[in-house]
Image (cartoon, rainbow, N blue to C red; front, side, top):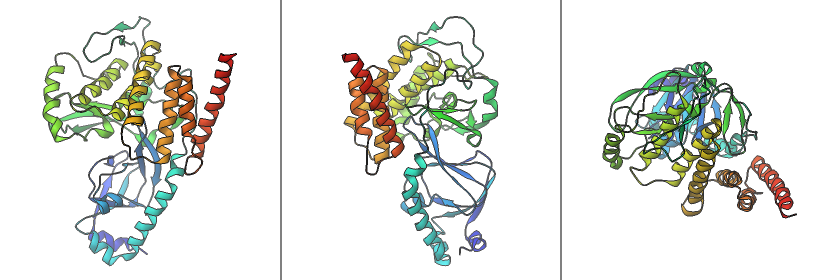
Length: 396
């Protein structure tokens, strides 16, 4: 049995408040944590880039051991679901801890084995859902005026100004914080999401998550007001030293063209700007198709919310193009289930642009009998059944 009191003498004890982050996916890892009191959530990035909770850990559980042992970046994001106290073990005292508490080594090995075995089960909670006719999370104060076309270098032709703002219901899911820009080393205020309060409502066939009374898409992008560096909040610290100078130069040009202030309540126009600003940041380096695909997919969801069919179709085509490039022409270190999700998403995007035959191929490729996710298999089978009927009716 592990002697927590003895461990406490070797490692430090830290306290984390509700919704406080321990670390983000991709951060360097040099510590592991044992929960003395409280609960934490474990999140991975879904195909669209949004954090997806796959587990909750409680008193006595531990995390961070894989990064500590392998000296690799963090494989998940960890956030406190309530006030939490943890014992911290780092590289300097790990060997001493194991020497004095050998049972901890056994627990670590057993825990790692269990997590690998249960990973597919934890991810398979995703359920199918239909797009709601009304989404209270984004329904806000809107005028009856028609959308106004915008002219700026960062927007594609056809993008407009939309009369939609966040509702007051968003406030309870947010809190104010600040972060340090990794490009210009200056601090700026940000809106943080209280992930502990989120309640999943449903998931669309294209893997979009809907939450009760809240839309995380509105707060997923952070823009540094000093240098204009923009990225998803869960990837904000992930910028290479080689790109910093280019991003700063790019920001100087953008300052004369784009306003990046966020209102309170936030307006959908500002949300669109933030996503297009991420695309601008990507252009400072080599554009990765997977990263741009996540942005175009989210933009398509937002255009769907404002009922702009023309821009929804445009961004759906861009998302399909980028995801196809990622699927067919790049090397991926992905699991069987991740490939299933990607091919299902490709199928759904093909359906959006009326490529039924291509959609059928992707759904067929999504079915994996050995080692696959049964829920995803059923989703693909249902889509294949519906498509066969639709194609048969077209041919008669």
